[in-house]
Image (cartoon, rainbow, N blue to C red):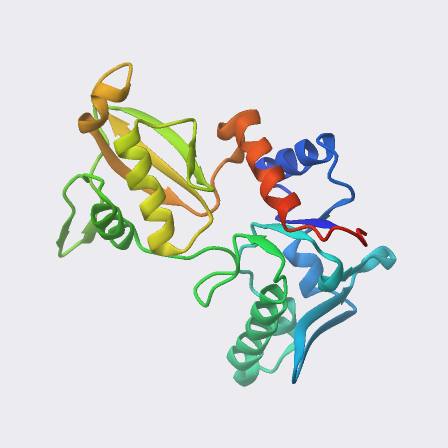
Length: 253
């Protein structure tokens, strides 16, 4: 089984899952984080000398056992748990923290190829401020626009008079492909934040960017939940190959 963990309205993830099905990855299961929070049975099991695993009994007799999951596209967004609403007022922060811990443990049990794995800051990927992204981008080799911090807080630099482009960074490639200098910076940025699948937005000061225009591009933003459709069929092929590489030679489910 391959798992696409996403919001029901995440059209980019739904598109990617359907594309993977068309390439022969079967079955591909779509699961919303809301379904996990409302599961009739949600378990995380960790024992000495045994690999941790998780289990969820969903509505409609659907069962997710992480031991049967060969790969995951994880686009789960941290949600307020519905259990908080029925808790006493003084206990709500505790209930939210406990449910968040359960979800992080459950997601961490998706130890097969997980794109992007849960972290302490987010249920998928990482959560960083715009300023932190800019710092990482500069360290990776990008140029950025100046940021200002004053009485109004952090002022984001305006991306004016430039052409914006969005690219996916995955498996040490960029989709659509970037000039080598920028591609190297993008790959390094993804490694720095430990996010296997990253979206980046660049601002170009030339109408038709190309290899000679790399010096005219500025880093604008990064996103751990990018629109996967910008990568096209080349990205889907690379994604399928990565997920298939984690598949056992036998015993597929």
